[in-house]
Amino acid sequence: MQSHDGVEVIVSEGDQAELLSKLKKGAIDLALTYNLQLESDIAFTALVELKPYVLLAADHPLAEKSSIALASLADEKFILLDLPLSDACFMSLFDSQNFKPSIYARTRHIEVQRALVAKGYGYSLANVRPVNQHSLDGSRLKYIPLSGHNPGLTLGIATLANIKKTIVVDIFSQFCQAQISIEKIPGMANL
Image (tube, rainbow, N blue to C red; front, side):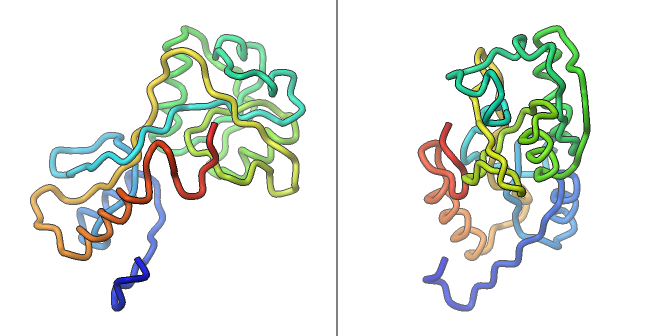
């Protein structure tokens, strides 16, 4: 984006509902978000599918496995990332396996989730894999693929379907498509 002088990118954070509301009100031009509960007035360009994985403390007995079946975690304590829509996605994975996790804690903050897991209070599920595999206190984490068929979330670009996109939105979308793929996602570790 450095080659486009005069274009200012302003980041606006929010959960899915907040981002889509801002998009519909015209407060933002596009949203990098997931394919969750998108209505017909939203156009969505898929960039990459993010498969769920198990987040463990590096010294957890299962941390050296190449993949983990969700059922093998049935007796473990679960740390739920309790964000709107994300929580339902993660809980649906358990529903598909016909068991309920033993929820130890719920948090809306990824760093709290990572800290609790890194200190051994339980495991968690996530789709985003930060390159930094440590919690804020420096404790190590491991990302282990979840075995079996587990639908992921698709990260993509949401825009208003009935509005002609500006050249800036088109250029930014092209930039995102060039930067984000299954082979490379800026800021994310490979599994």
